[in-house]
Image 1: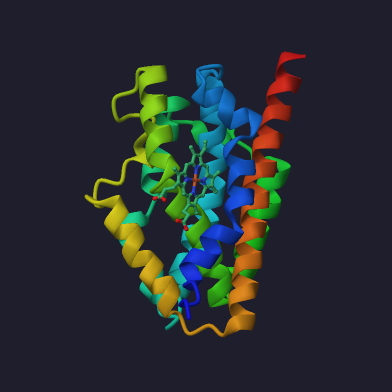
Image 2 (image 1 turned 180 degrees about the horizontal axis):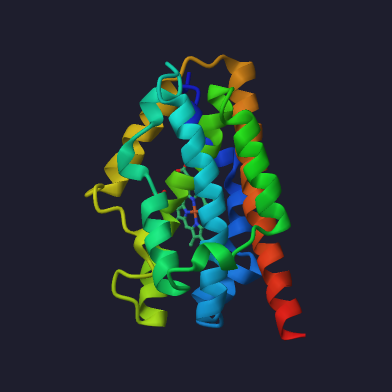
Length: 217
Ligand code: HEM
């Protein structure tokens, strides 16, 4: 008899199609192909700031939750890097010139609602962003650096200085996913929440593309 697949593998497999949808969205594909501007990139950093503010506020609330705590690591914290990036990209008055897009508002509301009271929901949002940042994010950072001539300024979000071996970090994270005390029903709920998180990310790219088109029109 073959072993049943682990939860972390099931999660990756079940979210594979949603990942492709997000990965190949027009806005992101354009940026990676060199067809985006520095302003497009900045617009994405702005939306990340709202999303990570919600995620990292939820992290503080969940720090002592027995199920969520093993996933929490200060080495992941992104808000200081995002704020330094925004200061570099926009200027010291960046807070006065930014606003969340409609999908960001809904995404942030969801993270704040479920991510502060339900450990599985928190982990779903935490996983979708940080494991992505430690995967494709590392590649995106390198491309942005090359394209816009950044050194470390402007792409601090993609640099995890305290994580020397991202692949190993992700392996440990997957072991923690497999060790979480979730029954089959709860595992399904977590997968559904990850799929929802992917949907927000894809719709955010659509919002960004729309905002860009409106600016040009
Ligand atoms: C152009 C954009 C993207 C590229 C090129 C990309 C690329 C990748 C690659 C190559 C992996 C596999 C790494 C590995 O197995 O170690 C990966 C994993 C992952 N990506 Fe992306 N990605 C992109 C966008 C996104 C987005 C928008 C999200 C969601 C916010 C996301 C979330 C994830 C997650 C959660 C994983 C880990 C899957 C797992 O192993 O369980 N990615 N990505």
